[in-house]
Length: 286
Image (cartoon, rainbow, N blue to C red; front, side, top):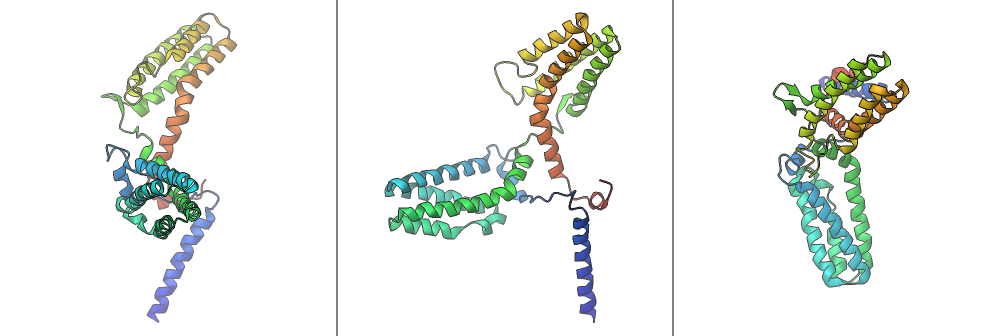
C-alpha cells in the first residue's frame, strides 16, 4: 500500500511539472546548457581559447582527410587521420560529460578503411562523423558561445564611482535631453547636453580601447566626431527637421551600431546565466 502511495505522489509531481510547462509553452524557450567543465577551456579561466582551437583543428583535419580520400593519397590521409583521432578523443578529456556523445565506431571505420584503401568509405564515414558533430552543435554551440565568448560588462567601471551600466544610462538621457531641448526651442540647453554627451563618449572610449586595441581611436571615431560637429552646427543654425536628422544619424552611429553587437549579446549572456527561478516560471502575467 505504501508503494502505491509513493508512486502516486511521484506521478502527481510529474503531471504538475508537465502541466506547468504546458501552460507556458507559448512563453518558455527550452535550451540545453553545456556542462560547467567546459568553462575551463575558455577565457578568462584559460589564457587561450583552447576549446575553440580544438574545434578549428577538427574541422581542418576532416577537410584534409576528405581531400586526400578523393585523391587516393593514403600516406597523407593516414597522417591527418591520426591528428583527427587525437583531437576527437581530446573532447572526452576536456568535457567528460560528453564522452558518451563521441562516435568512436566511426573512428574505427575510418582507420580500417584507410588500411584497406577503401577511400570512398572514408568519405562516407566523415559524413557520419560530421552528423555527430552537428548534433552537439545544434544543442550547445549557440548557448556556449553566448555564455563563454560574450564579454562580461557587469564589473567594468568608467571611474571609481561610476559603473559602465550607469554611464550608458546617462549617455542615453543626454541624447534625449538634446531632443527635448531643441524641440522646445531651448538652444542653450541643447548645446549643453551635447557637450555633456561628447564628454561622456570620450570617457567611454577609454574603456573601449581596452579590448579594441587599434592604432586609431575606436570610440568616438572620426565619423562620429564629424556627426557631433554637424549636430552642433544644426543646433545653432538649422531647422528642427535638420536637427532631428542630425541627432538620429548620431544616435545610430554612437549607440545603435555598438548595441547591435554588444548589448544584445550581453543581455542574452545574463539571461542564460541566471539561476532557475520557479517563482518567475509559475507567474502567469506574461
